[in-house]
Image (tube, each protein chain N blue to C red):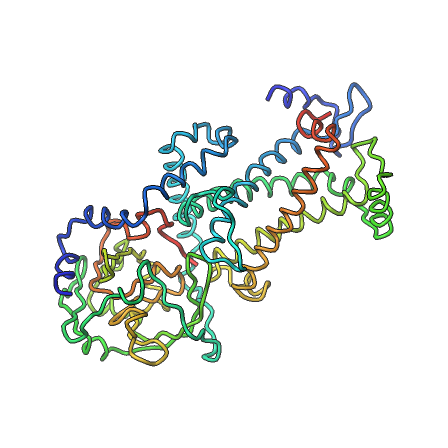
Length: 216
Length: 261
C-alpha cells in the first residue's frame, strides 16, 4: 500500500496530465485505486453470476463449479447482491471523476475508424509502438471506451432484472424481462472477452501493469 | 393430510420445521458456499476479516442481505403495478416448480380444507373453499419471475388479499402476513404488509380460468406479482397477521427475504 501513497505526489494537475518532473505519473492514484476495486468487484460479480446462471441456464451449458462463487444459488445471490454495491459505487465514482477531471476526454477521444483500423493493422503485424504509456492508441481507446459502455449496460440490465416491476420503464428500454436477462449475459461475455485481451496485453507489456500498481 | 395439518398449525415447533428444511440442503453444499469465498483471498483486504473464517463471511453477507431488504422496502412503490399481458402471451405449458416432484405435490381435499386465520385480526373464523369462492374475484395476467432467473406469463384469478384483510379486520399496521402451507417438509413465507396490501396481491383460486390445479397450488395460492416466485406460496393452509418475523422455508436458507421485483 505504501507505494500507492508515495505516487500520489503532487505531480498531477487537475486534468490528470503529467508534469515532466520528477517522474512521469502514468496512472493517477484514483485510477489505480478504483481500477483494483473494480477488478475485485467484477470477479466477484462474474463468478457469482455464473453460479446464478447455472440455476436456470440460458444456453446448453453450465459453468464448472470450480469457477463459480457461492456454492449454490442462495449463496451466489448473497455474493452477487453484496458485490453489486462495491461495483456500482466504485463505478459511479469512476465515471464522475473521469468526466469531471476531463481524463475520459483527453485519454479516450477522439476515436476514428481510420485510426482504429490503422492501429489494429500495426498491432497485428507487431509494429504498434507503445513507448509512451500515457498516450492510448486507437485500439486501446476503442476498447477502454467500449468497456465503460458495456459496464454501464451491464449495470442497467442487472437493475432491470433485479427490479422488473419498480423499474419497468428501464426494462421496457431493453424490450422485456427475458431480453434484459439475455443482454445481461451478453455483456458479461463481452467483459470476459475484454478481460482475456486486457490481461494478456498487460502481461506482454509488464510496465503497463507496473504503472497500474505504482503509478509510474 | 390431517396429520400434516396438525403438524403445521399453531404452536408448531418452528425450529423443528427449519431443521427439517435445512436437511434438504446438503452439508456439502453449505461447505462449498464457504470455500467458494475462501478461494478469493483478495476479499480479506476488503472485509478486513479472514474469509477462511466461514462464520464471519456468512454473517457479513447476511448483514448485506438485511441491508438490501431495507433498500428494497424503500424502493417499493405501493402504486407501481406489475406489467400485465394479453392472454395470447400466456406461457404454455406453465412450468411446475418446487423442491419436490409433481407426484409429491400436496393433494389437498377441497371439502375438508379450511383456511385458518390467526394473529392480529378481529375475526379468526376459518374459511371453507365455498365461502372463499363467493368473494369477488379479479383476473390478472402477469409475469411470474423465479429466483432462478426464468420467467413465465400466467393468468391468475382470485380475491385481492387487501380486500380479504379488510374483511377479517386485520391490523394492517402489523409488519407481516405469514403463510403456512401443505408442501412436504412444511413451507412457509412471510409477506411484508405493504406488499400484502398491494392492489395486485391476490388470494388465487383459478389458473387460466380453471380451478387451480394441484400443480399450481390447489386449493389456494398467494399470487404476488411484485415478488419472486418463492414468495408466492401455494397449497396455503393458514395466514397469520403478525409483527414478528417468523422466517420462511427458503428465507431461512439464505434467499433474500424481501425479494421484491
